Amino acid sequence: MSFLAFGLAAILSGGNMHALKVTNGSRPFAGDNRLLTTVSPNGDGFRDRAIVSFRLDRPAKVRVDVLRTDTLHPGRATKTIWSTTKRFRAGPQQIVWRPAEGTEPRTYVLRLTVGRRVYMDWPGKRREAPVVRIQGIEAEFPRRSYAPGEEADLRISTDAPSLRLQVFYYSSQAIRRGKDLRTAGTAMTSPVRVDWRTHRDAPGALRVVRAGNWPSGLYFLRLSASDGRVGYAPFVVTRRSPASRIAVVLSTNTWQAYNLWDANGDGWGDSWYVSGATRTIDLERPFLDFGVPFRFRDWDLDFIAWLNRTGKHVDFLTDDDLEAYPTGDELADAYDLVVFPGHAEYVTEHEYDVVKRYRNDGGNLMFLSANNFFWKVQRDGRYLTKVAQWRNLGRPEAALVGVQFIAGDYGGRQGAYVVHGSPWAFAGTGLSDGGRFGQFGFEIDTRSPQSPPGTQLLASIPNLMGPGRTAEMTYYETPVGAKVFAAGALNFTASIGDPTVSQLVENVWARLSVP
Image (cartoon, rainbow, N blue to C red):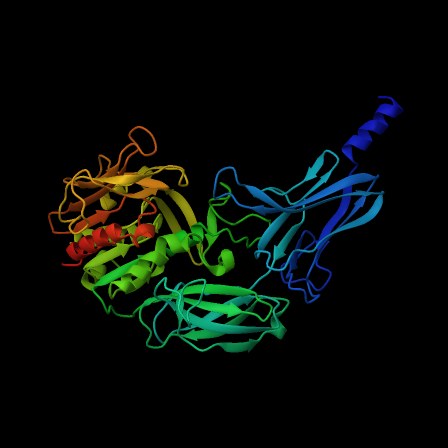
């Protein structure tokens, strides 16, 4: 190669970048390192910017793209939220990103392009590019449920000098005075101010919750700072002994499976939905989206609002509470009906055993979403590991639920259910055989050869996601008297505000709540 050709190649390649690092211009937060820095852009001059430093061995044009990572949906792995391009001489250089106030708290990957060379991190790969963590107020409880009188040590990460803490009980979607705008929660405590100045550089623990004589249900601890930052930590108040004959199980394993919070600081969410290399998730991570779990409103909040509107009194359980039952016999002694309103996709072997035994004892089950009891997971302390699909382990979920997952498309195709008789289920709805209602999809279930004998088809959306990929709503009874209903569509619960769906659920509830 001639000298001229060598020089042209060097210009095209842009040279090499050395001594790459990122800082915040102030003190590091615990966990920060050469390629990870924490920034809190609130305009107070403390950790308001990310400074990318590097050394070039020759003049080059450098482009920096700040990427928000997201792989829950196909074709949306990253979204660029800020970019800049600058020309530099050889030697030490810097590029500064000053995030706007209100930038969503999470980690962001920085992609650096020098000529044809790209410095970029991908999940499970060797780190070679900076990551910036935008810090809000992150908080998490070590457990997902507490009985009245039990105390909890909350873990908080923020550099706000002071915090206001207040507990809200989720009761309805109606926003009235005294309610929290993000969760529609009713205030259960007065705000309490906490001095946080000694914890601005590392997470701190705070004993904050001592549930009094509060009803069993879903609660949020709201943490807010004077600069406008806010965070939430959800928890469930359960009972040491049942106060109702009906239990509602919130699918807290699924909450964390869909949680894209990045604990290891590589810029990508620590979730099974981000990388196949991720097999284990941390159940004690805070939730992305300011602490409110992903699709929380679709799977849980609308249903809880319906319970309150209709005057239903139930005991709330988490996956952990279900896991705590020694056998299904004890669960059957406690409850006549167990309801899964959300997407109960991830269950341990013990949970599966308990619920199956409960059904075999004559206990009634209501599944108001789709794709339930699909994955076997293993719990080891604070960690949950995905093992295998239950149907591939000889335990097809249709044998318990009545239907099982067949297809999903992130809501690309939705359709109306067509009624197939069953006058008791559709009484008062104005629907008869052949009638249509709603728009449903996202993920759908259908019967299989392993469905219990006599499983009845209540409604269907024929060929919604291709030939034979039909959503089916079903009901079956067992010889010992157990009654099991399955909605068959992922977003069924989210439509419970519709009068037709509300009446349908009311009819099923009346039938299944009787032992």
